[in-house]
Length: 179
Ligand SMILES: Cc1cc2nc3c(=O)[nH]c(=O)nc-3n(C[C@H](O)[C@H](O)[C@H](O)COP(=O)(O)O)c2cc1C
Image (cartoon, rainbow, N blue to C red; front, side):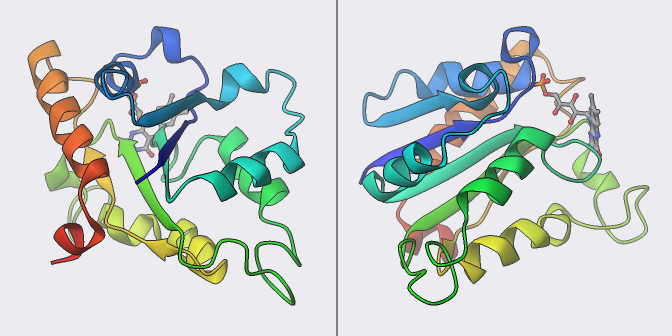
């Protein structure tokens, strides 16, 4: 299975959590890791290139720090620019049919805070629904997300442990993830 991980962190060099996650993935030669903010410093996304790349992979992972209950803005722009009418959806827009998509995100908040009655009110599964709806509208298969909670307070050992679990998660079969 060919996997592409699109990392959207405004400053991956100064990140702790997302850097730990990508550091672990880099040990796996079968995973292609990309740094979106580094590739597009001017935010001019090469749509044809992105669409060509999407076709080459079976599973695409979007990895990002959770910002105001959503993804950082360059990734939102990537969705806006790349998932075009007639290519990703609408008449003839079946290029992503059956492709697997997954979210991997890191949060400042703890898991307890992301539940009904917690200070963030909703679970991550609920808050990720706009992205889920986008990807399934484009005929993709949406797989369970990987979430590292409490990323800012986590020790290096905690983040390394999460990174190991992350590498397993994104390489697991859809069957194993769903059941
Ligand atoms: C602009 C901004 C918005 C943020 N919004 C949230 C949020 O909505 N929920 C949350 O749990 N953490 C939020 N955080 C905390 C980040 O998710 C956290 O610092 C990040 O996941 C840590 O990863 P890193 O070490 O790779 O930067 C926010 C941080 C910033 C800078």
